[in-house]
Image (cartoon, rainbow, N blue to C red):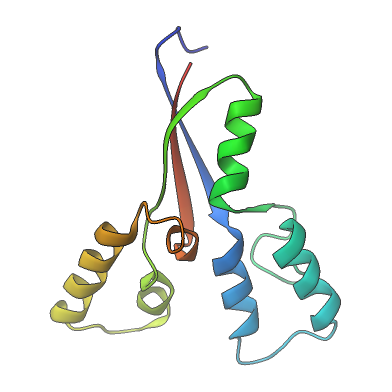
Length: 127
């Protein structure tokens, strides 16, 4: 239990990065159109995905869930930034590229149009 005024941190998997991972996979899944629509519209995982029993959020959805739970949301940020998926899938990355990805992640972490392109979302709220 968190005391009044205490901080609560909530993490979520991003819906759009999940869609990107599925859409850009080398081997497309059999029932692509319906599953992609369910993923992008409602956060429903695709069959055979890495998190089959999970739910993929948008930053706005994560914030709304916390507000509905009675919390005051201070911020929702993207953690890895838009280059995170690239870094995760690359075996070797030069230090310059890794540093550029970090700069992009920091600069875009709270930009509403970009933060959903991080693999993970982090919400900070108060009781």
